[in-house]
Length: 286
Image (cartoon, helix red, strand yellow):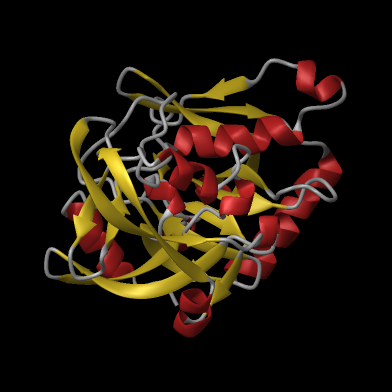
């Protein structure tokens, strides 16, 4: 069940931007939701001397202890944390050392210089919206920051009570949607077609999260749909047709901005794919 009141409060206080829903597809790269005991059982601890801090600045050499994940699966732990006096269901994760091409934590430990990167230690990644069978829907914490579209951030605040960092805007929605779409369109003639653009704000539409989508208003939303076999579900944008109290499938795409005007770059879908989108919406949003 989506806690709409909490999400609205977080949005109003600029802790999240509720328009941009992100998700982790469960099962992909072994992503699974664990209990607290299962998560703790998968963590290992090591100590070594570091000579720079997490930003790369030189420091007086000191011994530090790090927790890391040495299994192949990418873990998810849902935990309620306190941010600014607000209790927020959040998800904690950590990048497995087995995904590191340079030899993992043992390589860093031998260097005795560098601390373990934030992503490779347990960290709070975002606020949980809703858990479904196939997805964990979430928001990145923004704290009023909107990074450039082509940037990934590893900044965060250290939560003393949780003994871990809370990341700030780890991925921009533009990057998130675009990467999935372009990877899915990586083969065939469709990949060579130029994306079309729909400036929804100029057309009087508002971008809303899926749980606020109202077919009687001029709104646009995004939702993952399984358009291709053995690939990630693709972000598909849908708009309302208020005169007919229905919906129109815009296409698979990603958010863009032209100055202050919000828009969507998209590729149109074939009729059978549009039918699949409608079936997905009927099943998941009813």
